[in-house]
Amino acid sequence: MRVFLKASFPVATGNRAISDGSIIQTIQSILDEVKPEAAYFLDDGGERTAYLFCDLKDASQIPALSEPWFLALDAKVEIRPAMNAADLAAAAPAIDRAVKKYGARTMTAR
Image (cartoon, rainbow, N blue to C red):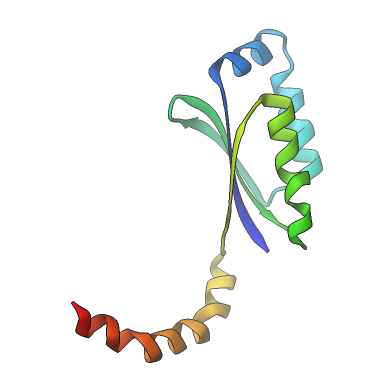
């Protein structure tokens, strides 16, 4: 199950981690554990934020993915299901079935 994780941490927490020199090591340690497919770092809503795409074998891995961010950086964490292009292609038959079954109803309701 591929997921998108957004971890935003408070400015004060980030400032402390930058000042004491721990931010890079902390983030690298988390990345080494969770092994994301991709990781990006930017601001979001005025907070330092990590965007990760990870492939989980099981939903029971969600705590291992989120807890390091909560505990190390006091982060707000959001996790959403995500698809890559191959996943979207594999979903095409289900999309077609939904269009055939429900698409006409949607078009007539407008």
